[in-house]
Image (tube, rainbow, N blue to C red):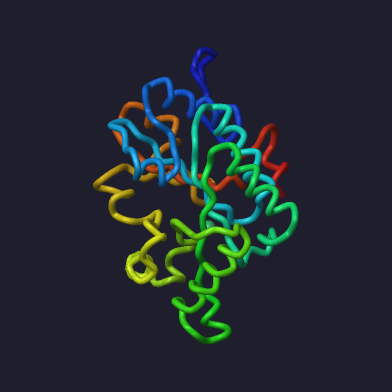
Length: 224
Ligand SMILES: [Zn+2]
C-alpha cells in the first residue's frame, strides 16, 4: 500500500456512515421496503438489517442510519437465543427504532419442525402470531433467516401468497433481487461483490442487507 492510497472500506461505523452519506450525496433515496413500495425513486437503495443475535446492536445501527438521513427495515426473530423479543429492553428497542422512522418486521426461521414435528407453515404462523403480539400491530413483511432451512424462496413466495394482506412483501422477492435490482449482502462478514460503498452510482436501484453484528465502533470485540 502506498502512502497516498485510500484504505478499502471495512466494517467500522465510520465506513458504514460514509457509505450511506455517499449514496445520499449521489441522490439516492435510502429507505426500508414499505417506503420503496409506496414511492420508488429512480435512484433508490433499500436498506435491510437482519437481526440474528442482538437488538442492542441494532439500536446503534438505527441511530447511524437516522443520523445519515436514511431509513431502513429491521427484521427481528422470535426464536433468537441472543434476545427475547418480549423482554422490556427488546420492546423498548423496537419502539426506539420505529421512533427514528425505521420499520421493524419479522425475520422468519425454519428447522423447528425437524425437531418438534408440524411443518414450516405452522411454525411460520406461530412466529407471526408472537411477533404481532409483541409489537401490538399487524405484520407487513418478512425476511427469511437461513433460507435453505425453510424451503428457500419457493416457500417464502407461497407463504406470502397464503398470508396475503396486510403482509405485502418478503425481502427475497424477485422485485428486490437481480435482475430487477442489485442485491448486496454482508453475510458471514464478507461482501462477495465488494463493499456496498463501492456501488455508489454503478446501479440505479439496489437492496443492501447488513447484519449489525459485523459492524463496530472501534473493534469487532464490541459484539462478542
Ligand atoms: Zn438471519
